[in-house]
Length: 74
Image (cartoon, rainbow, N blue to C red; front, side, top):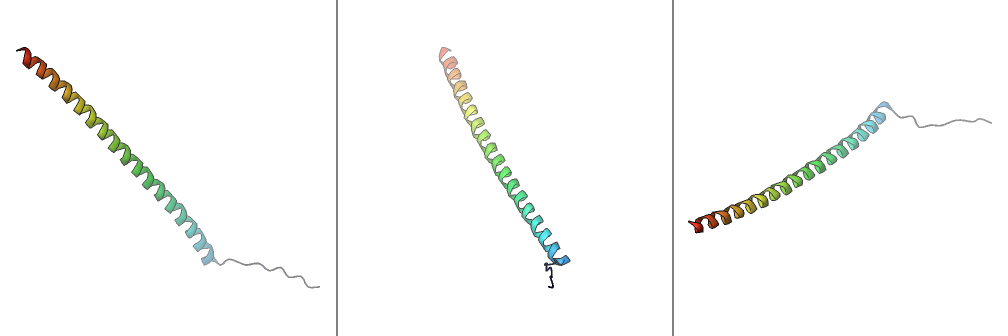
């Protein structure tokens, strides 16, 4: 009885392609996370700008009411 063990040997090029493919996947996922973080940061900046604009608008209306009150007392 003649037993032979067969195995698929990876060539150096196949191994390099598999490692490179795996690296590209990690690189792609990292870039995707960076894009999501940038998008989230942009969204938060926009929300802060809108909140600041609302505060300034409120402050301007308070200042206008005070100015009207002082103007009418003269």
